[in-house]
Length: 114
Figure 1: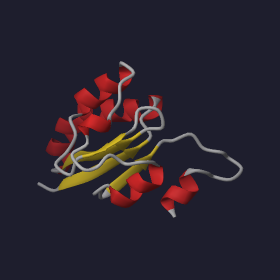
Figure 2: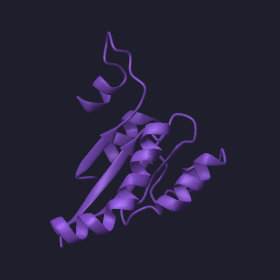
Figure 3: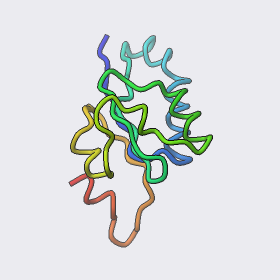
């Protein structure tokens, strides 16, 4: 079964809802599509970030952020310093970007994704 490495850039309301949805649908993804996933990194503006090539525990990350704590001590690698550092270093097959955006300039996501 292929295992996809996922990175979450943004872990506000949308990012956390997406993480919960991933957890809820994991068995369906395995049964219907024969795929699985690891979340190898999460980066936030308020709670720092974490990179873990072998996967982060989403329940722990969700709880930590919802209680106002930091993700940095969940990081196995040196914690990312900002979004661009995260994008450059996180080992991922897919990057989900859910950060706030300026609709006129597309920033900061535009810079991160270039």
